[in-house]
Length: 294
Image (cartoon, rainbow, N blue to C red; front, side):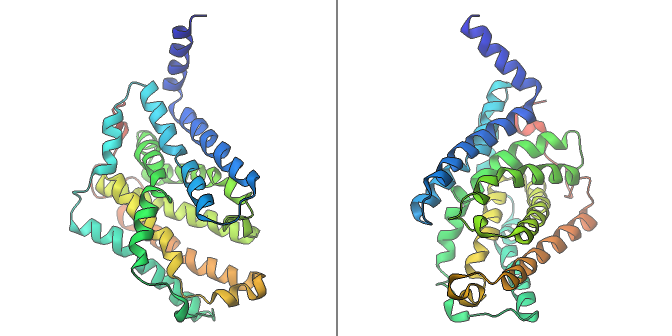
């Protein structure tokens, strides 16, 4: 069979099964790279973080491959990451809401008896680095795939809420290699913490959808994503109490996870009540046209 015919057949299959192809490519790219990282048994380090971050480019790689094969507009798709004119209100929300979520979770942690150590908090200025790193390498890069591609295609057939759940489940499963790597935070979690993390992911997926549908900006979602991820650096929990002698205290760690998840879940429910599950926004929501697909 001529090579050009084979390529045409592959592209045709991808075009007919866009979401399936996206997930296959996304999972394959990430699982292979992060699986290798796990097999290397690297200790927690910048090298490990960089490699894991590279593996997290699976979603944009998957999206780019499907858009190309389906005859979409790659420039239009990538352009979503450079949409910054969304108004001061939405930048204030993207940058400020993570602090409110952190504050609420930390207050709940303290109210329920969680030990804190304010002296151990890092220099506040480090947040700028955490935000920049998280936007381009530490999580935000995923959003060109999950939010900038998969979500609009799903919203062509389903409500924003249902689409958020589908993306959230796919997003959660995609993280599996991190749970198999003993040197990552995920790898040290017990079953209860893992389940709470899944709940947080599903709630976060609703928040991310709300931000994307309200602004049309993947950049805003990536910054918001980075801000939420970065809040863990500034949680005032006493790390020595959480892991005395290097052995995690399961009860205290569970308390930290629960109190961290509650604000996300409450906010997600509030957004559904306020905006409605159909659009999760007060404007027309993005569909396949944002990547040049019908």
